Length: 471
Image (cartoon, rainbow, N blue to C red; front, side, top):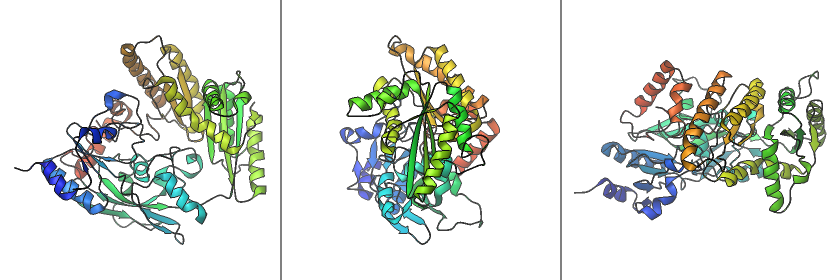
């Protein structure tokens, strides 16, 4: 009598992993919490939409849980298999199918690495403006599945703003063709937005049509230190208007990034040890750092933007720090890796989001929560759109057994803080398995019931990424 694994071997003979040693790397994503890790029963590596359809027809017959997976770079545990489940890794569906320069659009498979798409577009003077800051390792399909954001979302928006079309395979193996190369479409119900950010719970994305954006020919970066958090967050408000208070509104920066002073010093010191950096420029009294990026199509235009942003920083007490554009961005990108190396698995990467005008209150009150819990906390993130990474770390004096309940209390308080300010528990990393227990507190019951009904309509057997996103 044949088993489902025998059937899988028939439909994907060369792209099926069943040995534990081969499946081991698929048991985790980038979440530090090892309690979320789980070895899948099998891993399939399809190369076409038809192969994904065959997989889902088999899974539907046997009621097998299937978890779609991109680059495994997620920070919510959303690409980890359910008990007894299969991982459908889309890493081999990695072709850019078309770059349509005339329509400013691209069609591609979900396994394309974000940086590889950028390399393909750069000689054409185009780029995908919705990319996140992990572009070297994340895939476009993963970006769409989590509606990922990044440093330039303050100007360009998150991934959803750039998705024009999707091909999606449902739990029963049907193919949905949504949107396409159209900027307007009111023909029937617009199902496309349902799948962006659905974390693989409604269907498996097998083809994506993206809007492309003309690439700025000039970029410049400013870095400023502030002696007080309130001064830095006041500067953010001015920057979001395009210049200092009292000036006419100007071009919005393409990035406004925040790093707390202690975290910036730690990351800079590590960069220095690795072979150079700006560590000497970040004085110990600095309580906050802002990185601001300007974009333009000419040197003169860029100089004008940088002058306006400089005034917004300095009139709010900021001190401009020197460094090349690449060096300054390198500091910002080094921060999450510094946190990871500082604390190993004993930290939690959070990404609460509040209305942009509330970033000052969020940072102040998060620091109070950290002091109350007696936890070191790294605070950094996308100040321009209100999305902050507030990352608690286990101090040496707390045992591993004590850490989990202390962390749970801190996260409960942090999420409540975000909601009290008009925000919510995740702005770009998603819910996954990591935050699922908190969703019922973050979403009204009637709204949650409507979401469950939508999920049930697309997946009545509950086989697509069960245990993720919704309670």
